[in-house]
Length: 212
Image (cartoon, rainbow, N blue to C red; front, side):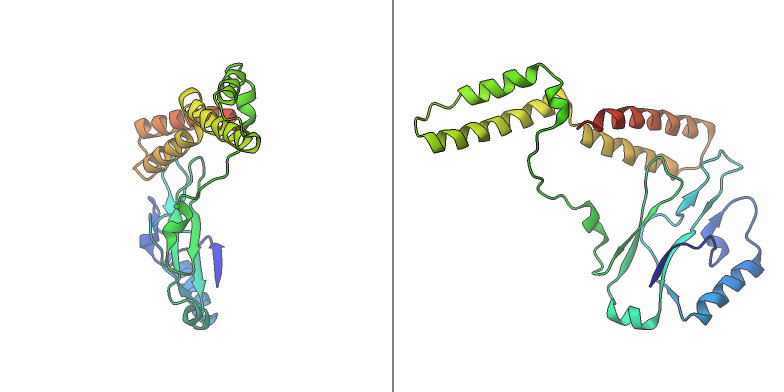
């Protein structure tokens, strides 16, 4: 199996622009794949994996990133599936190749370990949150008291983070999704302005997230 940017298309439907791809180049690419015994794995998601993000009528979109395999590989992984994953602030979409046919797993939520964020220490309120949690336990059993104090600190810090920092990572994800959704539209002047505004917000928030 080989995957990546082939900078070529299999037919005219895989390119959207004012100038069609020369038929001879498409034919040569098809012949190359046939000579190598490769077949297209197909995809799920948006058809185009690359866009120049210019306004109409200068917008160019194309499916340049693909995954191909031979018959032996296809027999080994009959459930394999390719998903085009949009990425904000990028000209390209990512190829997510799932051998078990479950492309949605990359978005699956996993339980994350608790970690103390550096950004919390920059706020004077952080000390108060920890002190309040540490003094709230009235248990006189030493080892249980320590465990309960640590657990209380964890819960208080997470709650304080949601209310004070506004869950930056969640907002970053939402901004990324908005940008990707706008990029799939016809790029008019108003859409381009909206995309640039969203990107500015994303960059500012990402700068804040770097210390989280």
